[in-house]
Image (cartoon, rainbow, N blue to C red):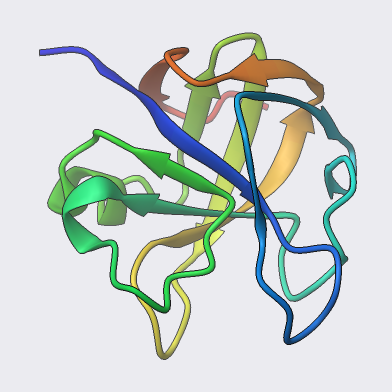
Amino acid sequence: MSSQVNEIHIFPVHGEAGQDLRNTVVEPEGLAGDRRKKAAVQVVAAEDVRPDTRANLVVSLDSADLAASIGKVLRVGAVELEVTGAPSNCPGVYAAVRRPGDLQVGDQVEVVDRVD
């Protein structure tokens, strides 16, 4: 079963509602227009989305597989995200941008071993 990007969100202003996007540019520091925070990108499995979820990417990857991706790389379309850890009080994983680029809803998501 292939996984894909279901939703893209940015949160430009702390404490305010986010913006839903169909496509975006992922820069070295994170998604264009997103305010900088603990990690460049937060990714959450669709099954873990709650009303207060503030993740940048919602993916159809199973939550156990997403959690197991810590230390690996997520290829999301042409973008590569290095999964660095898990938030302490919300679902999903944090990731650093390894290869910037464009991404859009529907792009395929693949977990691969990290190769330096």
